[in-house]
Amino acid sequence: MRRSDWFIVALALVGVCATRAVEKSNVAIFVVILVLAVIFVATIIWSRNRKLSVLLLVVFAGLSFLIGARALRDLRDVEIGQYSGVARVISDPQRSGAATQIVLDITGDRFVVYAYGPVAWRLAQVSVGEQIIVSGWRNRLPSVQAKRWMSRHVKGKFEIETVEERRLTAAPLFRSAQRIRKLVNVGAESFPFDERSLFTGLVIGDDSKQPKEMITAFRKSGLAHLVAVSGQNVAFILAGLSPLLKRLAQPLRLFVTCSVLVWFVVITRVEPSVVRAAVMAGIATLSISIGRPTRTLRLLALTVIITILIDPLLAWSVGYFMSVGATAGLSLGSGPLARVIPGPRWLALLIGATVSAQIGVTPAVAFVFGLPTAIGIFTNVLAVPVASLVMLFGMPLSLFAGMLSETVFSAFGSIIMWPVLIGVRWVWWVAALGAHLSSTGMVNLGLWIAVFGVILLLLHRGARVEG
Image (cartoon, rainbow, N blue to C red; front, side):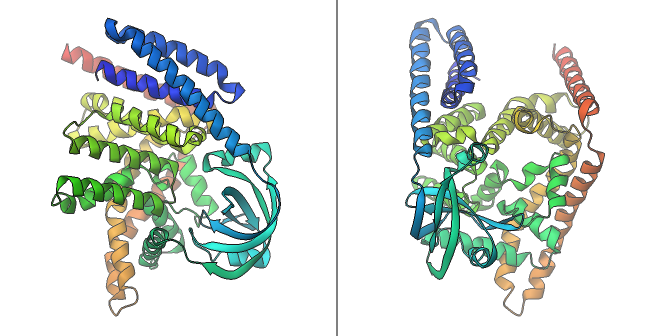
């Protein structure tokens, strides 16, 4: 890490806090972070650059605040009342209790819909990007729901009355993404229902059909991040395409890489964690193509700055901060931990990466959901390597099996998916076991204290050995 890297990190931190400071409850936090960042930057930057660095920090904080205020003002500027006309489908329809939940874009504003009866059945047939003819009433969301939906740019709730059968075709990009999602689902049709819903969650982040007990088990075992597509999935996609990309000229390689990243973001329904991972991968590819590869933490800070400036409402996304926290934990802690953990090198790397990512994501999880279970460290060590293989090989194998499904070779497609099914079941069993062994309250706190104690002991012993 260089001094300039720490300045970029301070810039990203201040930018996020300034964006969130639009809410009055976060002003005090923003002031504290800004003062600490100014002191930190003034301390580590060369004397001739201190004044300029502090000035840039303050100016960027002001700019971030103004951009955040504008985004929040636009979010609250919504037209309400009766509406009949065209609406564009933004999210996949999914079950929410007895209702079908979907997000529609109506004249440039997004509304969440909870539909019942025949209307729900028709909405269940639509795909992202299609346009439908609807009628109903546009209303504001209650404050609690509004905060939950704000990172997705949802402005209100649409009380839908009718939906016409006629649908307008989506753009080619959305149609191609829908085709991929359909092939993945068809390729896994030989799986039992629970395993199929988990598989689609691991590969494309589609957890809409997962049963409630599975969702609960993954949350209690600390494995919920596996069904939220993130940087790991993006890395596997690029790794799978690397033999082809290496054969291309540098400008064409950059173009194809960025196109694939955009396409994958659309396939996974523009989840905040995927947006972060795709932008970071794009910046990394660009830096390598111009001959100036940079360090991971600097890349992460630049990604945060760019994404928050483009979409300030990401500053209210829990999934976004979990993704950022996990990446920061990996970049800062995985190497030092792997060096001091005894045992085989592969096991030390696995444990170091798992523990550092878990620690990195803990602040965001604890702030929203409470202290995560310490058993998650052990379940991640058992499940992540197998889940990674499912992510790496699952998509190409399911696409191949999906293409064979309507041919005489459909049985062969089911056979090649058997190893993937075994991997999916292993992940599910680990989640179920972790949920059974998970603890809460003082017991969980005690386990976390023990984990940190072991980490400090290992780091201290490693420092003594190096000394």
